[in-house]
Image 1 (cartoon, rainbow, N blue to C red):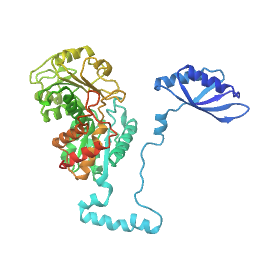
Image 2: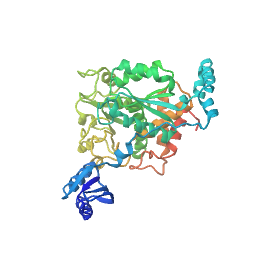
Image 3: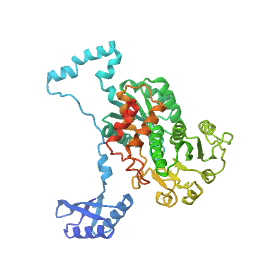
Image 4: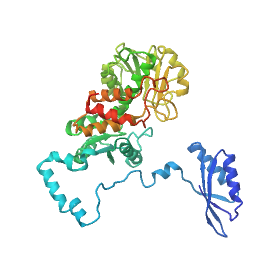
Length: 448
Protein backbone atom coordinates (compact mmCIF):
# COMPACT_ATOMS: atom_id res chain seq x y z
CA UNK A 1 0.00 0.00 0.00
CA UNK A 2 1.20 3.52 -0.77
CA UNK A 3 -0.05 5.82 1.98
CA UNK A 4 -0.25 9.61 2.27
CA UNK A 5 -0.11 10.61 5.92
CA UNK A 6 0.25 13.60 8.15
CA UNK A 7 3.91 14.67 8.66
CA UNK A 8 4.19 12.67 11.87
CA UNK A 9 6.55 9.72 11.94
CA UNK A 10 4.58 8.30 14.86
CA UNK A 11 1.89 7.31 12.35
CA UNK A 12 4.16 4.48 11.18
CA UNK A 13 3.56 2.60 14.41
CA UNK A 14 -0.18 3.23 14.22
CA UNK A 15 -0.30 1.78 10.70
CA UNK A 16 1.66 -1.31 11.77
CA UNK A 17 -0.66 -1.80 14.76
CA UNK A 18 -3.78 -1.46 12.59
CA UNK A 19 -2.49 -4.11 10.17
CA UNK A 20 -1.54 -6.51 12.95
CA UNK A 21 -4.91 -6.05 14.68
CA UNK A 22 -6.66 -6.92 11.39
CA UNK A 23 -4.62 -10.13 11.14
CA UNK A 24 -2.00 -9.00 8.62
CA UNK A 25 1.77 -9.33 8.86
CA UNK A 26 3.89 -6.26 8.14
CA UNK A 27 7.07 -7.18 6.24
CA UNK A 28 8.34 -3.68 5.39
CA UNK A 29 7.51 0.00 5.89
CA UNK A 30 9.53 2.50 3.87
CA UNK A 31 9.32 6.27 3.93
CA UNK A 32 9.26 7.09 0.21
CA UNK A 33 8.94 10.85 0.72
CA UNK A 34 9.06 13.17 3.73
CA UNK A 35 8.14 16.88 3.65
CA UNK A 36 6.73 19.41 6.06
CA UNK A 37 3.33 18.81 4.49
CA UNK A 38 3.08 15.01 4.38
CA UNK A 39 4.76 11.62 4.52
CA UNK A 40 4.53 9.08 1.71
CA UNK A 41 4.81 5.54 3.09
CA UNK A 42 5.19 2.28 1.20
CA UNK A 43 3.85 -0.54 3.33
CA UNK A 44 4.35 -4.18 2.37
CA UNK A 45 2.32 -6.76 4.26
CA UNK A 46 1.02 -10.30 3.92
CA UNK A 47 -2.68 -11.13 3.73
CA UNK A 48 -4.46 -14.48 3.72
CA UNK A 49 -6.28 -13.87 0.43
CA UNK A 50 -7.72 -11.09 -1.73
CA UNK A 51 -10.67 -10.57 0.63
CA UNK A 52 -8.36 -10.26 3.63
CA UNK A 53 -6.23 -7.76 1.70
CA UNK A 54 -9.32 -5.55 1.31
CA UNK A 55 -9.90 -5.76 5.07
CA UNK A 56 -6.33 -4.63 5.74
CA UNK A 57 -6.77 -1.72 3.34
CA UNK A 58 -9.92 -0.61 5.19
CA UNK A 59 -8.21 -0.95 8.57
CA UNK A 60 -5.29 1.25 7.49
CA UNK A 61 -7.58 3.82 5.86
CA UNK A 62 -9.37 4.24 9.19
CA UNK A 63 -6.20 5.37 10.97
CA UNK A 64 -6.49 9.10 11.68
CA UNK A 65 -4.50 11.19 9.21
CA UNK A 66 -3.86 8.32 6.79
CA UNK A 67 -5.05 8.10 3.18
CA UNK A 68 -4.59 4.87 1.22
CA UNK A 69 -3.37 6.28 -2.10
CA UNK A 70 -2.71 3.09 -4.06
CA UNK A 71 -2.78 -0.67 -3.50
CA UNK A 72 -1.01 -3.39 -5.44
CA UNK A 73 -0.66 -7.09 -4.81
CA UNK A 74 1.99 -9.56 -5.93
CA UNK A 75 -0.22 -11.12 -8.57
CA UNK A 76 -0.92 -7.79 -10.30
CA UNK A 77 2.70 -6.71 -9.95
CA UNK A 78 3.81 -9.95 -11.62
CA UNK A 79 1.60 -9.14 -14.62
CA UNK A 80 2.81 -5.58 -15.13
CA UNK A 81 4.01 -5.30 -18.72
CA UNK A 82 2.91 -8.87 -19.47
CA UNK A 83 4.61 -12.18 -18.72
CA UNK A 84 6.29 -13.02 -22.02
CA UNK A 85 8.67 -11.38 -24.50
CA UNK A 86 10.61 -12.09 -27.69
CA UNK A 87 14.37 -12.57 -27.50
CA UNK A 88 16.76 -12.93 -30.39
CA UNK A 89 18.65 -16.25 -30.59
CA UNK A 90 21.41 -14.70 -32.73
CA UNK A 91 23.78 -11.80 -31.96
CA UNK A 92 23.25 -8.52 -33.81
CA UNK A 93 26.51 -6.75 -32.99
CA UNK A 94 27.60 -5.28 -36.32
CA UNK A 95 26.83 -4.92 -40.03
CA UNK A 96 28.07 -8.41 -40.76
CA UNK A 97 25.57 -9.92 -38.30
CA UNK A 98 22.78 -7.81 -39.78
CA UNK A 99 23.68 -8.84 -43.31
CA UNK A 100 23.13 -12.50 -42.42
CA UNK A 101 20.19 -12.23 -40.03
CA UNK A 102 18.39 -9.75 -42.26
CA UNK A 103 19.05 -8.32 -45.69
CA UNK A 104 20.69 -9.34 -47.96
CA UNK A 105 21.50 -12.78 -46.50
CA UNK A 106 17.96 -13.59 -45.43
CA UNK A 107 16.84 -13.38 -49.04
CA UNK A 108 18.87 -16.47 -49.90
CA UNK A 109 17.15 -18.39 -47.11
CA UNK A 110 13.70 -17.24 -48.27
CA UNK A 111 14.42 -18.39 -51.82
CA UNK A 112 15.65 -21.75 -50.52
CA UNK A 113 12.33 -22.23 -48.71
CA UNK A 114 10.38 -21.13 -51.80
CA UNK A 115 12.17 -23.84 -53.79
CA UNK A 116 11.92 -26.47 -51.02
CA UNK A 117 8.90 -25.62 -48.79
CA UNK A 118 9.66 -28.45 -46.36
CA UNK A 119 12.79 -26.56 -45.29
CA UNK A 120 10.61 -24.01 -43.44
CA UNK A 121 10.70 -26.43 -40.49
CA UNK A 122 14.50 -26.41 -40.46
CA UNK A 123 15.30 -22.81 -41.35
CA UNK A 124 12.71 -20.90 -39.28
CA UNK A 125 11.15 -20.99 -35.82
CA UNK A 126 8.07 -22.84 -37.14
CA UNK A 127 9.26 -26.18 -35.81
CA UNK A 128 9.23 -24.94 -32.20
CA UNK A 129 6.30 -22.52 -32.23
CA UNK A 130 2.70 -22.93 -31.13
CA UNK A 131 -0.22 -20.50 -31.47
CA UNK A 132 -2.43 -20.34 -28.38
CA UNK A 133 -5.76 -19.27 -29.88
CA UNK A 134 -8.86 -18.06 -28.03
CA UNK A 135 -11.99 -16.03 -28.62
CA UNK A 136 -12.36 -15.26 -24.90
CA UNK A 137 -15.73 -17.00 -24.67
CA UNK A 138 -15.00 -19.51 -21.86
CA UNK A 139 -12.01 -18.23 -19.90
CA UNK A 140 -11.19 -20.37 -16.86
CA UNK A 141 -14.31 -20.26 -14.68
CA UNK A 142 -14.92 -16.62 -15.57
CA UNK A 143 -17.13 -17.12 -18.62
CA UNK A 144 -17.39 -14.99 -21.75
CA UNK A 145 -15.09 -12.10 -20.82
CA UNK A 146 -13.68 -11.36 -24.26
CA UNK A 147 -10.27 -11.47 -25.97
CA UNK A 148 -8.59 -8.63 -24.05
CA UNK A 149 -9.45 -10.08 -20.66
CA UNK A 150 -8.34 -13.50 -21.92
CA UNK A 151 -4.86 -12.25 -22.81
CA UNK A 152 -3.29 -12.66 -19.32
CA UNK A 153 -4.42 -16.30 -19.32
CA UNK A 154 -3.04 -16.93 -22.81
CA UNK A 155 0.25 -15.27 -21.82
CA UNK A 156 0.39 -17.59 -18.84
CA UNK A 157 -0.17 -20.56 -21.12
CA UNK A 158 2.70 -19.41 -23.33
CA UNK A 159 4.94 -19.08 -20.28
CA UNK A 160 4.07 -22.65 -19.25
CA UNK A 161 4.94 -23.95 -22.72
CA UNK A 162 8.38 -22.37 -22.39
CA UNK A 163 8.97 -23.46 -18.79
CA UNK A 164 7.96 -27.09 -19.15
CA UNK A 165 8.80 -27.94 -22.78
CA UNK A 166 11.02 -25.12 -24.11
CA UNK A 167 8.40 -24.32 -26.76
CA UNK A 168 7.92 -20.77 -28.03
CA UNK A 169 4.18 -20.15 -27.85
CA UNK A 170 2.32 -16.94 -28.61
CA UNK A 171 -1.17 -15.79 -27.56
CA UNK A 172 -3.60 -15.10 -30.39
CA UNK A 173 -6.74 -13.45 -28.98
CA UNK A 174 -9.36 -13.09 -31.71
CA UNK A 175 -11.99 -10.36 -31.59
CA UNK A 176 -14.74 -12.55 -32.97
CA UNK A 177 -16.91 -15.42 -31.78
CA UNK A 178 -18.05 -16.35 -35.25
CA UNK A 179 -17.02 -19.92 -36.07
CA UNK A 180 -16.27 -19.22 -39.73
CA UNK A 181 -14.13 -16.19 -38.90
CA UNK A 182 -12.17 -18.06 -36.22
CA UNK A 183 -11.48 -20.97 -38.57
CA UNK A 184 -10.37 -18.66 -41.36
CA UNK A 185 -8.19 -16.56 -39.05
CA UNK A 186 -6.35 -19.62 -37.76
CA UNK A 187 -5.95 -20.98 -41.29
CA UNK A 188 -4.35 -17.70 -42.35
CA UNK A 189 -1.79 -17.60 -39.53
CA UNK A 190 -1.02 -21.33 -39.56
CA UNK A 191 2.04 -21.13 -41.89
CA UNK A 192 4.04 -19.49 -39.11
CA UNK A 193 3.35 -22.18 -36.49
CA UNK A 194 4.10 -25.85 -35.93
CA UNK A 195 0.91 -26.46 -33.95
CA UNK A 196 -2.34 -24.84 -32.84
CA UNK A 197 -3.51 -24.91 -29.21
CA UNK A 198 -7.17 -23.91 -29.01
CA UNK A 199 -7.98 -22.49 -25.60
CA UNK A 200 -11.02 -21.27 -23.66
CA UNK A 201 -13.49 -21.43 -26.58
CA UNK A 202 -17.03 -22.25 -25.48
CA UNK A 203 -18.87 -25.44 -26.43
CA UNK A 204 -20.38 -26.41 -28.80
CA UNK A 205 -18.53 -23.93 -31.06
CA UNK A 206 -15.16 -25.36 -30.04
CA UNK A 207 -16.08 -28.79 -31.44
CA UNK A 208 -16.74 -27.51 -34.94
CA UNK A 209 -13.71 -25.20 -34.92
CA UNK A 210 -11.39 -28.04 -33.96
CA UNK A 211 -12.94 -30.46 -36.47
CA UNK A 212 -12.70 -28.03 -39.37
CA UNK A 213 -9.15 -26.96 -38.58
CA UNK A 214 -8.01 -30.56 -38.29
CA UNK A 215 -9.42 -31.17 -41.76
CA UNK A 216 -7.89 -28.08 -43.37
CA UNK A 217 -4.45 -27.77 -41.74
CA UNK A 218 -1.33 -29.89 -42.09
CA UNK A 219 -0.24 -29.18 -38.50
CA UNK A 220 -1.72 -30.65 -35.30
CA UNK A 221 -4.69 -28.88 -33.69
CA UNK A 222 -5.25 -29.57 -29.99
CA UNK A 223 -8.06 -28.14 -27.85
CA UNK A 224 -6.53 -28.28 -24.39
CA UNK A 225 -9.80 -27.77 -22.51
CA UNK A 226 -10.95 -31.02 -24.11
CA UNK A 227 -8.02 -33.29 -24.72
CA UNK A 228 -5.53 -32.00 -22.16
CA UNK A 229 -8.14 -32.42 -19.45
CA UNK A 230 -9.08 -35.88 -20.73
CA UNK A 231 -5.46 -37.07 -20.73
CA UNK A 232 -4.83 -36.02 -17.14
CA UNK A 233 -8.18 -37.34 -15.90
CA UNK A 234 -7.50 -40.75 -17.48
CA UNK A 235 -4.00 -40.81 -15.99
CA UNK A 236 -5.31 -39.96 -12.52
CA UNK A 237 -8.20 -42.40 -12.79
CA UNK A 238 -5.84 -45.18 -13.86
CA UNK A 239 -3.85 -44.69 -10.67
CA UNK A 240 -6.90 -44.13 -8.45
CA UNK A 241 -8.27 -47.49 -9.55
CA UNK A 242 -4.87 -49.04 -8.84
CA UNK A 243 -5.24 -47.75 -5.27
CA UNK A 244 -8.72 -49.27 -4.79
CA UNK A 245 -7.81 -52.41 -6.77
CA UNK A 246 -10.48 -52.07 -9.46
CA UNK A 247 -10.16 -52.57 -13.21
CA UNK A 248 -10.78 -49.69 -15.60
CA UNK A 249 -12.83 -51.81 -17.99
CA UNK A 250 -15.16 -52.96 -15.21
CA UNK A 251 -15.65 -49.57 -13.55
CA UNK A 252 -18.99 -47.76 -13.60
CA UNK A 253 -18.31 -44.08 -14.23
CA UNK A 254 -20.56 -41.02 -13.91
CA UNK A 255 -19.45 -37.84 -15.67
CA UNK A 256 -21.18 -34.62 -14.65
CA UNK A 257 -20.96 -32.08 -17.47
CA UNK A 258 -21.42 -32.63 -21.20
CA UNK A 259 -19.44 -29.61 -22.37
CA UNK A 260 -16.01 -29.57 -24.00
CA UNK A 261 -14.14 -31.25 -21.17
CA UNK A 262 -16.86 -33.77 -20.34
CA UNK A 263 -17.27 -34.87 -23.95
CA UNK A 264 -13.54 -35.38 -24.41
CA UNK A 265 -13.20 -37.26 -21.11
CA UNK A 266 -16.02 -39.61 -22.08
CA UNK A 267 -14.53 -40.21 -25.54
CA UNK A 268 -11.11 -41.04 -24.10
CA UNK A 269 -12.55 -43.25 -21.35
CA UNK A 270 -14.45 -45.27 -23.96
CA UNK A 271 -11.31 -45.57 -26.06
CA UNK A 272 -9.44 -46.78 -22.96
CA UNK A 273 -11.93 -49.61 -22.50
CA UNK A 274 -14.51 -48.25 -20.03
CA UNK A 275 -17.88 -49.75 -20.97
CA UNK A 276 -20.32 -48.20 -18.48
CA UNK A 277 -20.37 -44.38 -18.53
CA UNK A 278 -23.39 -42.30 -17.52
CA UNK A 279 -23.29 -38.63 -18.53
CA UNK A 280 -25.28 -36.17 -16.42
CA UNK A 281 -26.10 -32.61 -17.52
CA UNK A 282 -28.87 -30.05 -17.01
CA UNK A 283 -31.41 -32.31 -18.68
CA UNK A 284 -30.61 -35.21 -16.35
CA UNK A 285 -28.81 -38.47 -17.08
CA UNK A 286 -28.44 -38.53 -20.86
CA UNK A 287 -30.31 -41.15 -22.88
CA UNK A 288 -30.91 -40.92 -26.64
CA UNK A 289 -34.65 -40.16 -26.44
CA UNK A 290 -34.35 -37.47 -23.75
CA UNK A 291 -36.18 -34.35 -25.02
CA UNK A 292 -34.28 -31.13 -25.70
CA UNK A 293 -30.81 -32.58 -26.26
CA UNK A 294 -28.40 -30.67 -28.48
CA UNK A 295 -26.79 -32.65 -31.33
CA UNK A 296 -23.54 -32.95 -29.32
CA UNK A 297 -25.35 -34.27 -26.22
CA UNK A 298 -27.47 -36.66 -28.29
CA UNK A 299 -24.28 -38.04 -29.81
CA UNK A 300 -22.88 -38.59 -26.32
CA UNK A 301 -26.09 -40.27 -25.19
CA UNK A 302 -25.92 -42.71 -28.12
CA UNK A 303 -22.50 -44.06 -27.12
CA UNK A 304 -22.94 -44.10 -23.32
CA UNK A 305 -25.35 -45.25 -20.58
CA UNK A 306 -25.83 -48.89 -21.65
CA UNK A 307 -28.15 -49.50 -18.66
CA UNK A 308 -30.33 -46.51 -19.74
CA UNK A 309 -30.19 -44.87 -16.30
CA UNK A 310 -32.53 -41.87 -16.10
CA UNK A 311 -33.22 -39.16 -13.57
CA UNK A 312 -31.05 -36.84 -11.52
CA UNK A 313 -27.39 -37.08 -10.55
CA UNK A 314 -28.12 -39.06 -7.41
CA UNK A 315 -29.92 -41.68 -9.50
CA UNK A 316 -26.93 -41.90 -11.80
CA UNK A 317 -24.53 -42.36 -8.88
CA UNK A 318 -26.24 -45.44 -7.45
CA UNK A 319 -23.65 -48.23 -7.49
CA UNK A 320 -21.10 -46.18 -9.46
CA UNK A 321 -17.40 -46.66 -8.84
CA UNK A 322 -16.30 -43.25 -10.11
CA UNK A 323 -17.67 -39.69 -10.20
CA UNK A 324 -15.96 -37.18 -12.51
CA UNK A 325 -17.25 -33.62 -12.30
CA UNK A 326 -16.51 -31.00 -14.95
CA UNK A 327 -19.66 -29.01 -14.43
CA UNK A 328 -20.63 -26.58 -11.67
CA UNK A 329 -20.09 -25.92 -7.95
CA UNK A 330 -22.18 -27.80 -5.42
CA UNK A 331 -24.00 -30.21 -7.76
CA UNK A 332 -22.87 -33.21 -5.69
CA UNK A 333 -23.87 -33.53 -2.05
CA UNK A 334 -21.21 -35.39 -0.09
CA UNK A 335 -23.77 -37.75 1.47
CA UNK A 336 -24.72 -39.07 -1.98
CA UNK A 337 -21.29 -40.70 -2.20
CA UNK A 338 -22.64 -43.30 0.23
CA UNK A 339 -24.93 -44.46 -2.63
CA UNK A 340 -21.88 -45.29 -4.74
CA UNK A 341 -20.02 -48.59 -4.73
CA UNK A 342 -17.55 -49.28 -1.89
CA UNK A 343 -14.13 -47.65 -2.30
CA UNK A 344 -15.59 -44.88 -4.48
CA UNK A 345 -13.43 -42.48 -6.47
CA UNK A 346 -14.52 -38.82 -6.68
CA UNK A 347 -12.97 -36.26 -9.03
CA UNK A 348 -14.59 -32.84 -8.42
CA UNK A 349 -12.86 -30.69 -11.04
CA UNK A 350 -15.00 -27.56 -11.44
CA UNK A 351 -12.83 -24.48 -10.88
CA UNK A 352 -12.47 -22.47 -8.76
CA UNK A 353 -15.30 -24.07 -6.75
CA UNK A 354 -15.68 -27.86 -7.15
CA UNK A 355 -18.86 -29.92 -7.40
CA UNK A 356 -18.34 -31.00 -3.78
CA UNK A 357 -16.01 -29.80 -1.05
CA UNK A 358 -13.02 -32.19 -1.30
CA UNK A 359 -12.71 -32.32 2.49
CA UNK A 360 -16.38 -33.37 2.76
CA UNK A 361 -16.03 -35.90 -0.06
CA UNK A 362 -13.02 -37.41 1.67
CA UNK A 363 -15.28 -38.58 4.51
CA UNK A 364 -17.07 -41.00 2.16
CA UNK A 365 -14.78 -41.68 -0.82
CA UNK A 366 -11.58 -43.74 -0.92
CA UNK A 367 -9.84 -41.37 -3.37
CA UNK A 368 -10.65 -37.69 -3.98
CA UNK A 369 -9.16 -35.35 -6.57
CA UNK A 370 -9.93 -31.77 -7.57
CA UNK A 371 -8.64 -28.98 -9.77
CA UNK A 372 -7.39 -27.06 -6.76
CA UNK A 373 -3.81 -26.70 -5.62
CA UNK A 374 -4.69 -26.54 -1.91
CA UNK A 375 -5.80 -30.20 -1.77
CA UNK A 376 -3.96 -33.41 -2.68
CA UNK A 377 -4.38 -34.89 -6.16
CA UNK A 378 -4.68 -31.76 -8.30
CA UNK A 379 -5.83 -32.54 -11.84
CA UNK A 380 -3.86 -29.97 -13.83
CA UNK A 381 -3.57 -29.74 -17.63
CA UNK A 382 0.04 -28.57 -17.26
CA UNK A 383 0.86 -32.25 -16.83
CA UNK A 384 -0.21 -32.88 -20.43
CA UNK A 385 -0.06 -30.08 -22.98
CA UNK A 386 3.66 -29.11 -22.84
CA UNK A 387 4.80 -32.70 -23.37
CA UNK A 388 2.08 -33.32 -25.96
CA UNK A 389 3.25 -30.44 -28.13
CA UNK A 390 6.92 -31.24 -27.52
CA UNK A 391 6.30 -34.69 -28.94
CA UNK A 392 4.18 -33.42 -31.83
CA UNK A 393 6.77 -30.83 -32.85
CA UNK A 394 9.68 -33.25 -32.52
CA UNK A 395 7.87 -35.74 -34.74
CA UNK A 396 6.69 -33.04 -37.16
CA UNK A 397 3.26 -34.58 -36.76
CA UNK A 398 0.44 -33.36 -38.97
CA UNK A 399 -2.29 -34.56 -36.64
CA UNK A 400 -2.95 -35.93 -33.17
CA UNK A 401 -4.65 -39.28 -32.74
CA UNK A 402 -6.63 -40.98 -29.97
CA UNK A 403 -3.80 -43.50 -29.67
CA UNK A 404 -1.41 -40.64 -28.88
CA UNK A 405 -3.76 -39.36 -26.17
CA UNK A 406 -3.99 -42.82 -24.61
CA UNK A 407 -0.22 -43.21 -24.62
CA UNK A 408 0.20 -39.76 -23.04
CA UNK A 409 -2.22 -40.66 -20.23
CA UNK A 410 -0.39 -43.91 -19.58
CA UNK A 411 2.96 -42.09 -19.50
CA UNK A 412 1.74 -39.64 -16.87
CA UNK A 413 0.26 -42.44 -14.75
CA UNK A 414 3.49 -44.43 -14.83
CA UNK A 415 5.55 -41.53 -13.50
CA UNK A 416 3.98 -42.38 -10.13
CA UNK A 417 5.86 -45.48 -8.97
CA UNK A 418 4.20 -48.31 -7.07
CA UNK A 419 5.99 -47.40 -3.86
CA UNK A 420 4.75 -43.78 -4.13
CA UNK A 421 1.13 -44.54 -4.96
CA UNK A 422 -1.53 -43.93 -2.30
CA UNK A 423 -4.95 -42.29 -1.99
CA UNK A 424 -3.36 -38.83 -1.56
CA UNK A 425 -0.83 -39.25 -4.38
CA UNK A 426 -2.32 -40.57 -7.61
CA UNK A 427 -0.85 -37.98 -9.96
CA UNK A 428 2.67 -36.49 -10.18
CA UNK A 429 3.51 -32.89 -9.44
CA UNK A 430 3.48 -30.53 -12.42
CA UNK A 431 7.11 -29.78 -11.51
CA UNK A 432 8.21 -33.40 -11.78
CA UNK A 433 10.95 -33.23 -14.43
CA UNK A 434 10.08 -36.63 -15.90
CA UNK A 435 6.50 -35.73 -16.86
CA UNK A 436 6.98 -33.63 -20.03
CA UNK A 437 9.76 -35.94 -21.22
CA UNK A 438 7.61 -39.03 -20.70
CA UNK A 439 4.59 -37.47 -22.42
CA UNK A 440 6.68 -36.25 -25.38
CA UNK A 441 8.19 -39.72 -25.80
CA UNK A 442 4.72 -41.27 -25.68
CA UNK A 443 3.39 -38.86 -28.31
CA UNK A 444 6.37 -39.61 -30.57
CA UNK A 445 5.78 -43.33 -30.05
CA UNK A 446 9.30 -43.97 -28.74
CA UNK A 447 9.90 -47.53 -27.63
CA UNK A 448 10.19 -47.93 -23.87
